[in-house]
Length: 298
Image (cartoon, rainbow, N blue to C red; front, side, top):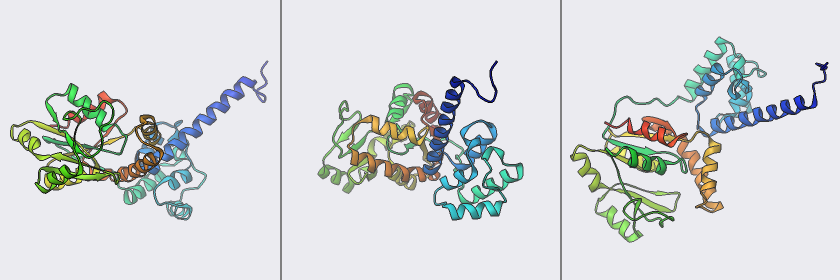
């Protein structure tokens, strides 16, 4: 007969592994909240829909301090203001407390809203290493109705990249000429190192012919396109999680340690700017993400 007060060793080991996995899941979710891979309102919805998940089992104190610019002092004042006990978990909040916390979040961290409508000029941007190029290549291969623009860059070609197919590789003098001649729709210096720009001529000709055009560019370029053409549909590509974004950047192996650290700092800044975009697509599956982006085209 099994003693309920003293479970078998195998049961204790399984319970320990389960507890470790749960703590890791909550820690990963806190990193996602801090980097805005997921917005806090979505975490509240997860806590309500999945009572056993990491969102529901996270203490409200952990949740609040994971938010940008919320320290312990501010956290305690918010809890007192909303009349929420610090020992509460998100999944254990009452209806009144859920509503009060949701309203506070809406005022402090407004959740980005997707814009209705479609456009013939679609801009795909997102944080470094999120897979913009991979999704764009999938669109080019399986959604040929969209014309994928080819950018000019001063960055050296990576192994396997083809001139005129992946990029137009130019030196600084030629890039200066393109800028001076007004031949770039947008251009920017990325990671304080290399310059990228979109040649204007092919884009304008394609749009004049009634084609749909996809620009795969960085945040600075997306802002310039929005300024030049407010009707453009700006799509922000999100990673499934912050941990996955870090894994993709490190696993890519094309940058050194200093460059990776710089790119991760940039990624945090880029994620915080997603509210400027019209649509949001999570790159957890390349084919699905590409189909979702293509569906936004008119």
